[in-house]
Image (cartoon, rainbow, N blue to C red):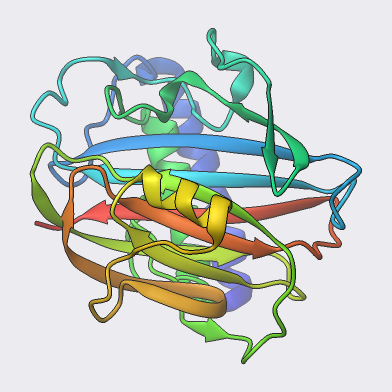
Length: 261
């Protein structure tokens, strides 16, 4: 059965890609009535970090209720930076006096929505089917990922790198399900649903910060985690903390945020 899927799914994908040559101008709407916001954040660690010369990329997908989803729609593949025309400039920043370079492209704002071309939707659906079959994802949806909860047990505290990922919402209070996974079996992450970016700054300045304490709104020492955090505010987001002991040249962190109310 497994060999059959690996054989037949690429054939289906190739056939539909050929069809796209004739119908590629058509834009598929989201399979649910929500906006899709996809972007990446690239981090390059400088020499002061234990993880140097490693890099981190956060692949973020935010699915949310956008009343203006028919405006500012883009169809380019957001994972292909060659199709993007505007970038945020390279920014040298610091955490605990250790410098890093951050690059984040223009679609990271909540003002635009992505609608995949036909071929892209098909490819993402097939990839999701394979990951569902392999058990790396738990739901049948190409843009809302739910990962299995994989804990690595209690870890000794080490120096860390932190990243804030904001939600998108027009509501004063909403609920989000979220999923995070890291591709390094020797690493882990902590995650907190915090009230605003100010709490991220508080963490960097003093390690003291406030976060939502409801069940499901935080997790410690996981390689893969999914949960729901309810009644969060407009400026909320995820505070993701990674240990500064990354050994891979590129550590990939997948983040999915999905507004459910």
